[in-house]
Image (tube, rainbow, N blue to C red; front, top):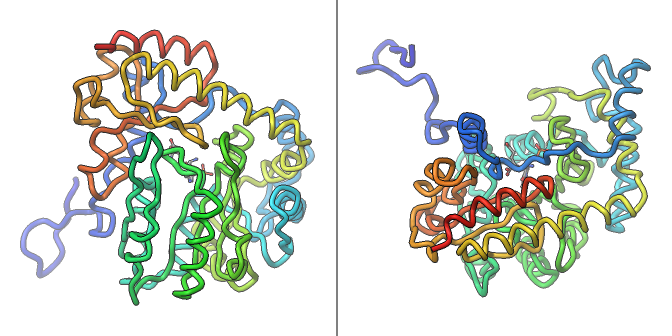
Length: 399
Ligand code: PMP
Ligand code: GLN
């Protein structure tokens, strides 16, 4: 049964409400299922094919065995993790947060994003997001009843850049917040200090809140990642979101966090408490240990992924794609037009049959689908032998 009639209504009424009707199944689930069905190499959904550090896995096992976190942890997160998050913000970014009032642990960055939007957005408020945007943004804005206002990043000399004039022009009296993501999924763009300073000035001038998704904070290969919260006037208006999934290669643990002023944290918690209340008890203790790993771990992760970026980017160039070599994240966006193709959807649906590789059509991350049509995203957070095999298969596409 997919429909249900409500008294007084003409015809069948869809079960799924209007807010979510446009979303369907996430592209990641669809493409991972396609990879399984066709036995293809999955460079679609962004998850590593090797787990994170063994000692952190062991820390989770220890917590579970010692009975730490097996019952509901405290609503804001276990104190050990909140302290470790605050220490991490100070160690890497020079930002001071009080672990008791300015840190909130969430079920991954995904819940943090949803809770922030559900708590801060009134129906009808405009939310500006950088297009292409991570797919949960559109759904979370919709669930909050907000109006999505995309500002498109466009390719310039093989990198996708933000047009600051366009961003300024997008702000209206109805704008509630800017939803920023750097390093940026799917383009791999790392916003520069100058761009971030301009975003901060705009937020201060127009008195906007900012929600910033920095889950790839440790994966800036060229240039540096600078948190928006560190710019003048931003500390009190910025909700900063990150998570353990990408930094420690445990995407299944779903441990994320928010750092912000006490007022913003308690606002976000108002929504979060009714979404999951709490999650991932034993994993929270393990992530606390992970955040305290020595610098060598974080440098090693970045160096490893930089080498993989180069391997896959070079292979894609050799196969005839135009490659937008990413400055960060673990995705590379390509342009398929040099291959004589125009439609990323059709290309990605056919790719498993053609050469046994799965990728993601960037158009799903756009409201302006035309702008995204020729772009296709490949993930490089995979073993070297897997990437080498993928590159060998993709070579068969070369014109
Ligand atoms: N934001 C971005 C930009 C992402 O790429 C992802 C996927 N890792 C998420 C949020 C979701 O993170 P999590 O798995 O911690 O919910
Ligand atoms: N963030 C991952 C990506 O962009 C996927 C996460 C998910 O499956 N929801 O591929």
